[in-house]
Length: 217
Image (cartoon, rainbow, N blue to C red):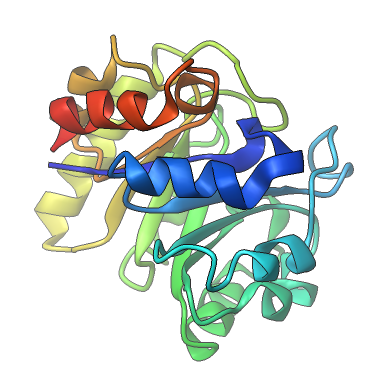
């Protein structure tokens, strides 16, 4: 059983609150928000004001994925009463341990994302402190990319590592999730499944959420 986190990166921003209402109607569990700075990744999306504009417009918690350089300077901008996770990239943090604790001290759960080619060993010494590990199954920066097949083995290895160490962090996957691979991702150990274009590109967004939930729980 996993939670569904549709990514508003693929939503119609001219109707953002209404689009979020549609995923809530369909049974989604979390709103995934991809924040991009045009430096760590090629595109620019949005910042704290957009995240805060959705407070009170939905009952769903927020999962804020910071694809930005020097995230420690911006983390407070994304703390809201509905922010469950703030996730930073290992590759963007000079002092990852400090940033993880900064997030937790601000009252949010701390997530760390790994790009496809970044090994799990990069998190060796912080796994006991994080609440979530996000495995990027596409290269970050664009929506609608194809799933990178070796990500499945990476997820399985992370799940095995979690079990062997008796840890309880959640495993999230972001990139290329679809109805056709959702069961395989679930079986590999995914707890939170991000889906962007697979949800917001559907003709019936609530029904697409229900379709995902029928597979992943």
